[in-house]
Image (cartoon, rainbow, N blue to C red):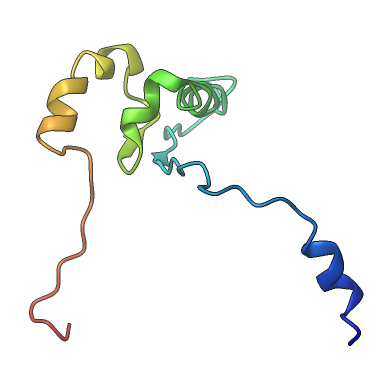
Length: 98
């Protein structure tokens, strides 16, 4: 029996038994009204996004982060954020069908 060539190529790709866990963070960029107050408005959200790639920021996975927040200060609240399940958003329905 002939197999499609695409299948033959895909079947040779090694598959990891357990894929690495995803880290998903909702990042709200800083709001700047004019370039007079900040000549590089993309710098703050870019720096925050870079920080979020660090291993020490892994605890923020599944949480909401604002680029205007001081990340070093946020780290001082790490245990509370984890234990109280803070910085998360939920959508709650009224009944089972909503």
